[in-house]
Image (cartoon, rainbow, N blue to C red; front, side):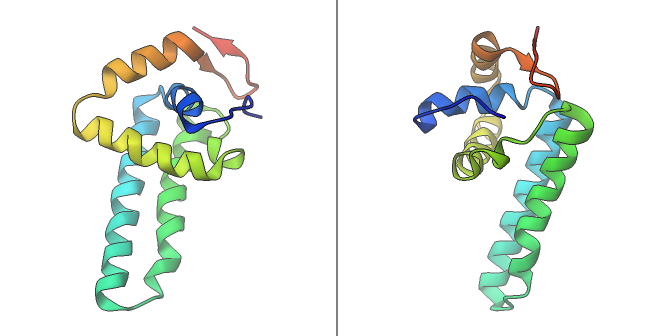
Length: 121
């Protein structure tokens, strides 16, 4: 279970630290890109069946990243709204080339946690 947070500002460094593995982040970026494209396509074509694929695509890639590579519990299970916002913020930091300093600061603050929640280096 994730620590208790009172605001997104408090939560986001924790969120970044939970995405320290670059393969996990890469899978998030793939899922976010594909799910956004599916959403836009569904809205453009008004084929609402594509909306079913939006969360499957986004969460599918992300959860593989967490369970297989990061080996932690997705923050979505405890903070689904902030996790969704955090995903797009992390994506924006990555696209703009500003992720590295934010990640460094987050890891200094929260470290890395394994699947049992034990903090590591």
